[in-house]
Picture 1 (cartoon, rainbow, N blue to C red):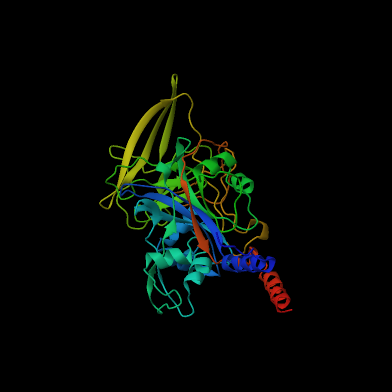
Picture 2: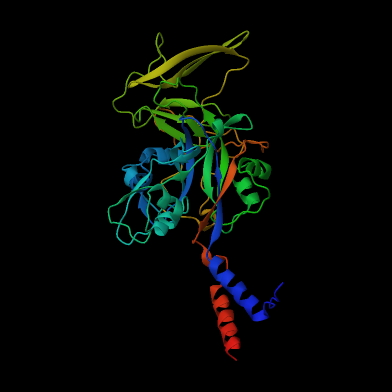
Length: 421
């Protein structure tokens, strides 16, 4: 066997430095993936941080969603004049409602399209404009971009966005899933506390082997919600509303809310209702959302006019009567907030945490969106949640946070100088 020269110390150092340079800047970011095999879709939420001051309508345009849907998902009062043109401040965190589909065997949203502007790059679109919800590589792959350095101005790109459904449940209770981009200051404990869930629940949902997370990871966070049971042929089939918020449906004619006090969906005429089909329950004087009670010796007779979905331009209502042990109090509603004009430093990136347990609320005097009052309910911690899988993707973002390049350069220069001596 021929003699082999031992590798010198200098050669080993050189190989080590070259290895460092080859990997510096590459951060392995993780996101939760839910496999799927059918063509159904569900409602989901994106946690989005504004990269600059934007009108509500501009944020809606980025994701091709209804501006009013964004406002109601964040419990922002829509009764303000010209609220769709209200300017939201940079760095505000909002929840974006999206449709989550099954594409190529996994859950994702592919309904978002972006038209490129001068100076855009795949990285700037992914990291800044869409606040890290997608990577440059994912955009490039979805659009078959061969040279990421060359983007035509006005080019339309599909922006694949993360989402999960998990059958709309968490621990057998109704839930909607928020895709949350981890910040540098986040911990799994902090995220669990903010959304009133448990570390175990988050680990199960996201198929995590430990509690370690890092900036850029995308977690699926289950939020308790009120689910509907509309027929499959209704246009708003599968409507689910996160606890402590609202949803607008039936061509802006009906608003539905969830909480406080229970996870029962409550719908009523919306304040935006202008030209709508009848909302009166058949064979009754009751309108949508109306409830009458009558105390009897055996309990309380409760009659209610409920929303049953939007079918072919018509609002479906149903009349129900039940005998309950006690008469219920007036309907309570989640607290509304004014359209935001600034970002509080401590609450930056932290919108609409799961509501706290409380039975307080407010009963509106008319069929408009209720005024700001009351507090929000919560749920006890959960465990044994639906389990997803985790994907890993390399990204150049946040590279400076992973290794001090200047130090590597200094060491490399010193090494070269020592080799020349």
